[in-house]
Amino acid sequence: MPHFVVDCSKEVLLINSEVEILTQLHTVANESGLFEENDIKIRVNPFTTYLVGNQKQEFIHVFSHIMQGRTTEQKAKLSNSIVTKLSEMFPQVSNIAMNVSDFEKATYCNKGMI
Image (cartoon, rainbow, N blue to C red):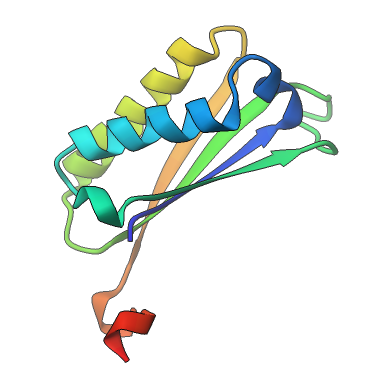
């Protein structure tokens, strides 16, 4: 926790590598002050087949899953910071977005909790 899953068109990786995306988003998430650095998990899923507005347009969408307890303002600031960073990295990509989903502490389990 938290998990950041980056769905993107494969073509954006010609502009910046997966490693660069992972590194930059890790930095932004860590600088938010909302998470312990060692808990931040980021993955990139490049797609070769996709449509955006019924056309093949490059896109980046970040799905963030975080533990409940952050304010709406904190989550909005996190989204804004990540979309801003991606917009700087990919100025030619017009479809960049992010959403934040909370998961309940009561239903969360990981291997270390067993």
